[in-house]
Length: 354
Image 1 (cartoon, rainbow, N blue to C red):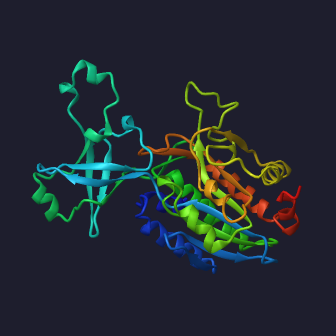
Image 2 (spheres, one colour):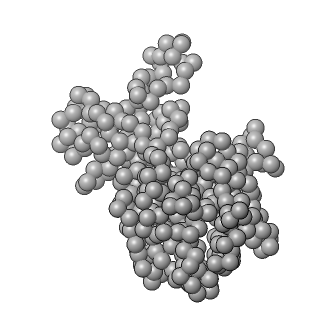
Image 3 (cartoon, rainbow, N blue to C red):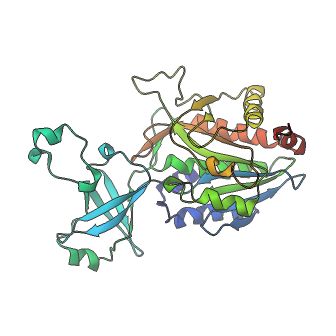
């Protein structure tokens, strides 16, 4: 878990994924893969198998939800704008890091004190536009002297931890450093096995602000088949139903529907049949809201058979999230077995020829 720890504790909001890209490059290069990048910052390693085709894209995304400094108040407070989707209720009193070119500054998200709220204000979710980051500065001049500027990224703070059940992983940015980790681990295991295709594994950028890196990555990979690796929403809270809904410990999550894509059904079936063949537990996700990089991948060129594979995660798009270590391992096993089956004959079976 040291690699996943390093990935989650690194900071990288949309447009500022440099540190994660360095880790991805280091790991891909250490495997002996040839590394390619796109113009936005996506990075992928190439692993050649028995055939040049089909070309398969395996992609997480490097960015995490965060913020950007949009204004420095005269008294030294920082107003911010979100990068990615946030619910205001999860923000107050959370610790954050304001990133400058030279160092990070710890701050806390503050607001009008609750003692001063009117009874009507107490009934509402406090608006994000009225929150600020307090870094302990006395005035705007001090903030600027420290090197903090409008446009600097702000990142949640949460250390990586494995909880006492030895399975639950607690960390920030599991959405979507998990996907980066999954792509790397599948590529690593493919070094030790034969596969009838060429695999490009890595990660895109700026997914959380509109799937932007997913529009450029296919131009450099030119995939015949694509997989987006991402987390899904766990629904095993006290009022949820873990028997029928995505939950921690239930196996990899295969998305049958989201707001951006209905997957290629034959590719979807090949993955579920592979899981059943190898007795790998899996779960199904159907959501009418949200989407992943596959929403762009499947529209590339004349159309690319695509699928989202991931794990259920609790509390995503907040300062902290949870996933199951066993689910991660099952996801790796499943995708390695799928890679062994994706030959030209399988690719032809995914096509719509009448």
